[in-house]
Image (cartoon, rainbow, N blue to C red; front, side, top):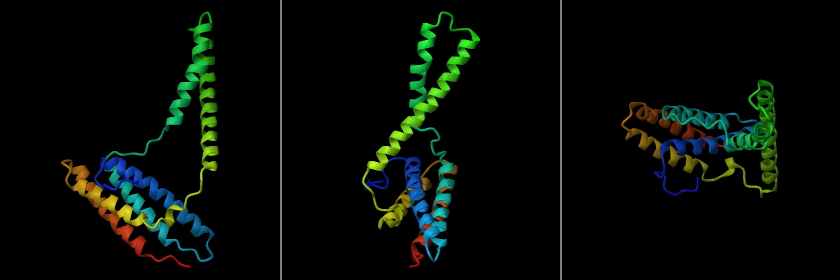
Length: 188
């Protein structure tokens, strides 16, 4: 979310990006709450309510988070090429049910192994990356979230669809919860 223009792009991608950013901030705030001497459950609960209202607005845009990532698709394609294609080309009668069953089972296991290997690579790369500051410590978190929510609400109010216009109310609720979370002073 490094763009300066709050009206750049569609509403659904902006809501998904803000949802990811808020999820990271909520997890950070919640983990700090669990390890604190004096727990403060109000801050991350209010941010969680903001995220919930953003989810309601995104549902009206049918902007569900993507369930399958690129690694799953890549793993299935690699498994099909590496495990499924050679037996189909080399076995004399590949249309027999036991051969097809064996190819299918080997392909599924190969996809799982490739996906696990890609995940391990991603984790290893993330461990080598330089540490960033915690998302909840970002001084511009609330301002950026407020600007994005206001821009999405303005776009929703101007939409022709009544469902998308109704998402503006959800975004207004999210703004209310965001201002409540911002006004809550952290306990020291």
